[in-house]
Image 1 (cartoon, rainbow, N blue to C red):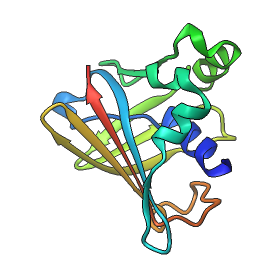
Image 2 (tube, helix red, strand yellow):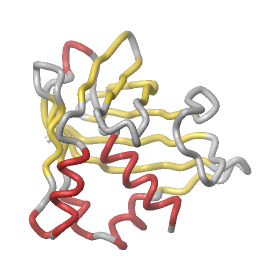
Image 3 (cartoon, one colour):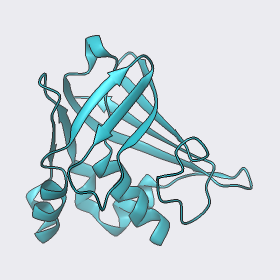
Length: 150
């Protein structure tokens, strides 16, 4: 459960983006594939959605000025305000096949990961060995987050 909550926060704090020519737009998270040190891969999104169903409606809008807006459904109750406040000042940038997100709240680390776009699907790949600043309580190898353009 701790891993699922962390992955939920990571996905909210460090949501999707695209290559420079296609970043701007609204996206919805569709999968969170966590690969453990053992090699076992599990989609963590169903567990997060089961625990907090309203998260299925969260969207991420990348604005042309490099800011990111996270929209949380009213059904999330008090979590709506918390999640949106955490992400209120998130900035994004793309360089080559990397996406970087920066948040003002320094309790949360900036993050950078591999970026891939195929049609209306965007994929972020966090290789934990490449990003040691990211919390990794389960000692996972990789997290692949997929998004669908709305």
